[in-house]
Length: 199
Image (cartoon, rainbow, N blue to C red; front, top):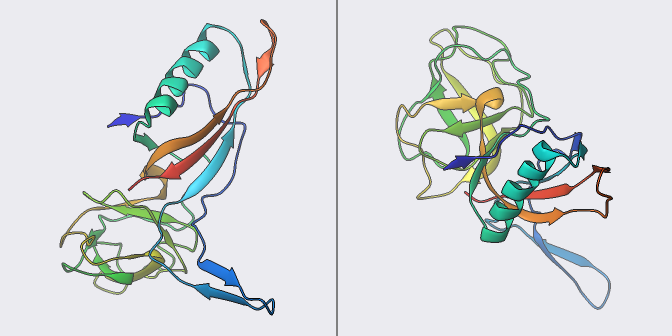
């Protein structure tokens, strides 16, 4: 799979967010919501670059991937590891589902190996998960991680699957919108991309 190049870095980006529940409003005005299994992080990035050979190459590549709905590996530039990390974290047990997972291989008896807002991925699973609270490892290097969205049946990582944490984690995503503003032949341009995770 192609990795989206960061030859031109965004000058702004929103944090990744998930879709909300389904909702409806009754005739009385009362709102009803219903949770779903909807997944897929979304975020926006803005860019500012000169309309020169480097900018035109970036634009040509991006336009091609947008037009064709190409699935890309994308590093979110606004995320950094908040916890201490370390060790060689692995999934501890097969067929785990839901909003928590047992793991092993962290540094022994360490507080805050992960913190709320850190993201994790599992080997051979395209989905990205965001940690919901601080995680401490025990004396054996084990830790239970709670996250969002849930792992659904059929999407479980394998036993001892490697865990990648924030700084190296990639989103599998597509370009949902690619907006190019009006500009002159020698001006700076400020395109906007909306990314949608496509696990």
